[in-house]
Length: 153
Image (cartoon, rainbow, N blue to C red):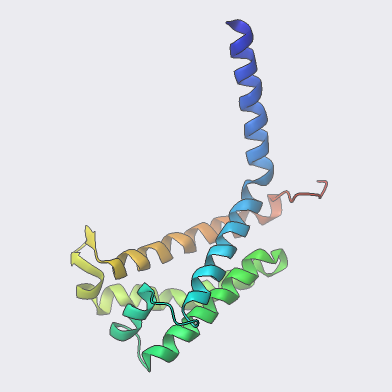
């Protein structure tokens, strides 16, 4: 039994070391990929929650707004994947943030079935944007400590 416990602890230590070594890298790449994937849906004409929001919240031609937001997300994703550009991704997210917050203020009826506990799909999308923004800040804050595969530190 002691041998089993020792092996479990050894495996646990190995797993934690693996997470410490690669977590920021994997997190950054996965968020970048998510931004590119979801961003490309918009200009390629696939219906997304952004399409619904563009018709109810943003000013201007909804089709143009959706395409701009889509390419904006692609740019954020590319900047997240290319490590030296992560701070540019943060800037692009900060510029986009007022639109997200304004949606909650200007169109609470579009964002919530019942404020503040029952968000609509549009509201859920905006809440997801806020969470991703905070996650990206965490990535940017950890860049100095990020260990990348194939690089000795």
